[in-house]
Length: 303
Image (cartoon, rainbow, N blue to C red):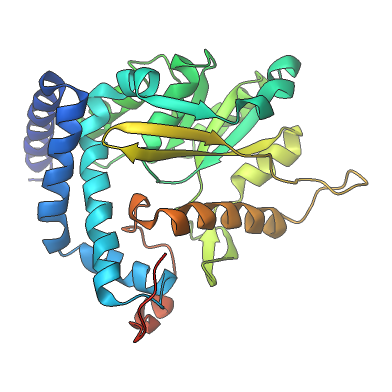
């Protein structure tokens, strides 16, 4: 039954992607946004998002939190509809700023780690490095359980194989280490829960975070740059490279992993507080006891 379900889901997704492809990037994005904001808030999974929003923004009234939820679904619907157009969007619909921070990196020819979040259209981030800067970047990501879906998404996010991807698995670790030894750039999204990770505050609550990006950077002594891709309007984006995180003290000693992650979390929090509807609130980011304690506020505020 599982194989049949996967096959049916895969066929449906292939047909849907075909529809999005022929409608063009702008119409596809608008259609996907409409589907997302119309259906998403009514789905059971939205309970998780509502709890997370209340946990991060306890001062907000319910109507403002619902607006964030609806905006999140609009953004997610657009992300899905934009998959067939990632190359066009990353090349023609995205403006990248902050690249002057990368000049020393380009000159040295060494490796680097770029961290981000499920924010805006996160799939555009690495694609823009190739289409605009001519710098290929290797990706790490979690594959869907459905192999049909995984194959379709992998082909889209790697631009038909021109970007190298490492689906998260025991075997991918060797590929990631090899990439840095080859002086490649590596893109990692750090905003998902990792049970074997390090507990570091995120929006004031302990969140288990994978420390791999810090461990790799300190081991290979390569910089870690936060990189944000923000949806400006429709399917137009602004990519921003931020200053590298501090990994070592003045004596050249590696800083504690928790300290580096805390700085990274602070950067991500800033993005989310500014545009909360563009973050994917569906992840189980915090422990269950934190989620159950989230309560609405009685005074209206805005973010």
